[in-house]
Image 1 (cartoon, rainbow, N blue to C red):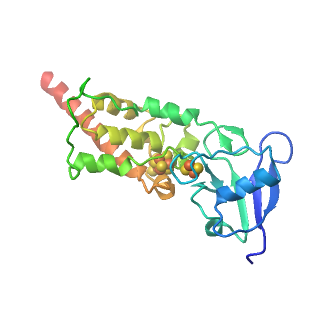
Image 2 (tube, helix red, strand yellow):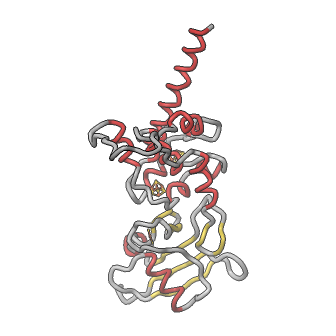
Image 3 (spheres, helix red, strand yellow):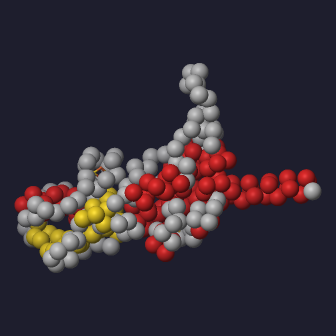
Length: 245
Ligand code: SF4
Ligand code: SF4
Ligand code: FES
């Protein structure tokens, strides 16, 4: 069995057959990214794909592997192959630039729309802020902070597929880490941004994002937190209006 080559199928864009088949020799501990690299180096120099770190840090190597979105540099071929076959395509829910390379612009535009950027409370902070590691906000922020922007969750989300304007799991997870960052000054603005028509309340909680995240982050839990906080904000505003009338 170890001498039988992998059967690799790759969805190609542009001219020619949309699905190309290749045979890749086996070697110990090959990752899916190793298979793609072998094809590109030996058989198909025009094949387009992305990677940078090869150690699960940069988030650039994500693809669809046998129908499932995955980071490919940390996915062993033996763990995901079906009868020695590995079928590869670009991530879902993003425009394809070429072959296995998608345009990440819509993904990062949504980070901007969700106010996924830290804004310090103090212009020139005096010394380091002290945030107790055991405090509830710190634990909530830490739970989502290791996101590597791979867009695996985004590709796994059916609501993004149905409603392309939906902010999606990664941007909402990022917003939740900042809502819980006690050093940040834009909590209110951010909650308003994620509580709108295309925000957290569109999430159907079916957890594909959390199931597939390679960093074991749960965007679903982050989104549940945003739903709670935005609902509390609406209630508080209603009470204020009532008192004022
Ligand atoms: S939440 Fe997980 S799956 Fe989504 S972009 Fe971040 S690391 Fe990737
Ligand atoms: S839980 Fe929400 S964000 Fe995650 S995949 Fe489902 S609908 Fe998308
Ligand atoms: S190449 Fe960087 S995460 Fe895979």
